[in-house]
Amino acid sequence: MTYIDWDEKYSLHVKEIDDQHKNMFLLFNKLQDGMRTGKSKEELENALSELIDNTVIHFATEEKLMQQFSYVGFVEHKRIHDDLIADARELQKRFSQGRITLTEKVSVFLTDWLTDHILDMDKKYAPLFRSESSS
Image 1 (cartoon, one colour):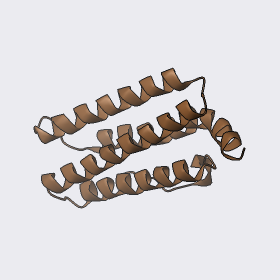
Image 2 (cartoon, helix red, strand yellow):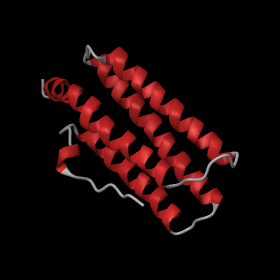
Image 3 (cartoon, helix red, strand yellow):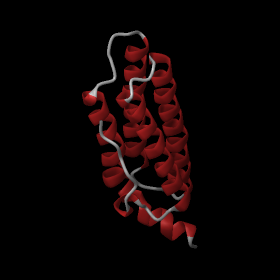
């Protein structure tokens, strides 16, 4: 199983967002640990649900700030958020229905989803958030 350790490369230097990202990493690692140690399906469902629910809250925070600071990439970024949440909810539904198991492949998807989104999409708005927050 793949764990994600917080690293400075993920920092946007926007405290609220960085704190939420750190929490998402902790929740992801909790899910990974549950997979690795053979936790029950119910415990894994709860861990996955907690990760997705926190992600929804996090995306709402980002979107609120994007609108507040008139981020020009808002529409595209929101579409990507919506797609990621739809994919995660579908994964959650399929797991809950017993149509899939949480495997290394799912783990890689979630890892890429978290890290790539931060390193690519979120880094684009970070300078605006920092400049507007310090004004």
